[in-house]
Length: 167
Image 1 (cartoon, rainbow, N blue to C red):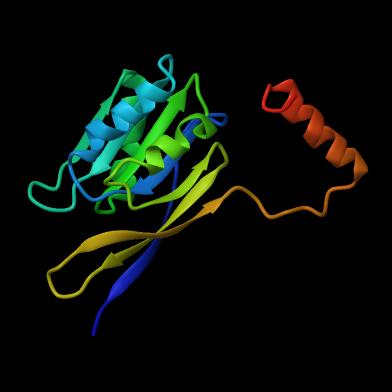
Image 2 (image 1 turned 45 degrees about the horizontal axis):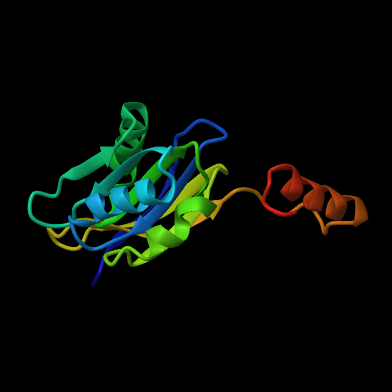
């Protein structure tokens, strides 16, 4: 019989900070993720942490901002799921780097890319002496509070133009 526990881990970060949480499969991913970000947005500041799932089982980290590296390591430590990675960023948004991240050969999936309050749902195996963790999914943000009306539509369109994503 397979035994496991479910855990919910909250992402700790400043309110407006964006991050990407995903799964990859190889230690080489760390440097490839670094290159994908820096080649997409050269002025981006970021920190990446990767949970190695075999061998030494270390949390590997890299980035160009020590504070963001520490934040990534702190959250990766809390999540502790094999082959997961987390990237915290400044001076860019997920929309600027997400496709490059998804195209890194080792990346298997992206669970979320958000600045919202986020909870990570984790399954922890307790089968015999084999203990491991995996991410089942995320809770990203809040429950909808209704359907947009004409004023909300205008706000949405104005917002996208104000931040430069639409003409």
